[in-house]
Length: 319
Image 1 (cartoon, rainbow, N blue to C red):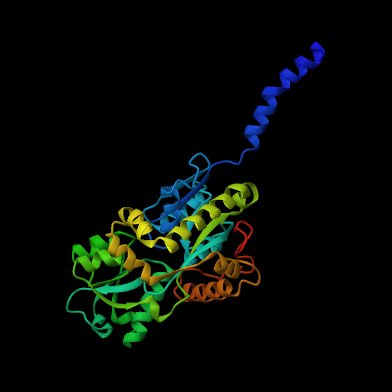
Image 2 (image 1 turned 120 degrees about the vertical axis):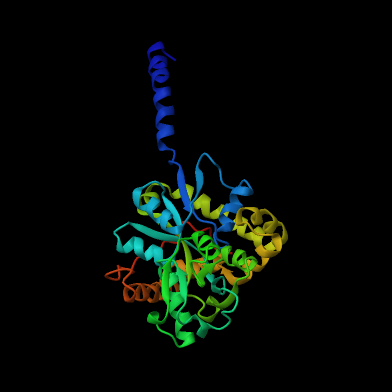
């Protein structure tokens, strides 16, 4: 090799290395709350399936906070309920659903103080509820089943784990809750009055991903979902081990963790392909119903475009 060629090659080597670093996808940050449906994602971290230099899970105090982080660009993805995803869309945040975690089949519940043993006993009571479509749906369904109207009760705003303090301090007589808080309220003596098993398929948990990440972090997103389904396989095949690993973060015993999972349906890889790939009828139907509930409860002014909700691009191939 001539000296000049050697010098040119040597000079370009650092540039090539720099370009290689620039080509590497940026860190993917995912915000998520403590909820049994999201926990397999955090289990993937516990099992060392998520490379920390490429994927970072950020623990959030509430889905509302996760939504704000997504809107501000602090994170590229967030675990949200379907109604919060629709709220993001209505607010002009460019996001799509890349994963459906679960549907609630009893894990969302209305809990009440001792002595309030029937839904009809809620008349004149103070009910703690988050300002979300999921909360509005649970409240509406509970009141309908009791033959009551919203005017028959006093609605008290609560956020996430704040429901525990509201119950302890006597600020509410009942609360719209979900796991793991529902189990913690049982430990405080609360009664279970009504739950989402009465209307399965409407309270749905999803992974919302920004369009920027979809365009520029496709390899990392694919690796994230591969790791998630590997962790989900552990939950399915070795539930005892999975529950032992998940219980500390949930703040539950192993037995309570196992019981909490009885209230949700974790969607499999096959389910996700059915929900996310066109025509994705289950997702579109659920989104339309939830959006209509949100509009009727003044949570959104107009129903946003629901024609391009999701992408199945990052899912592993089906079995």
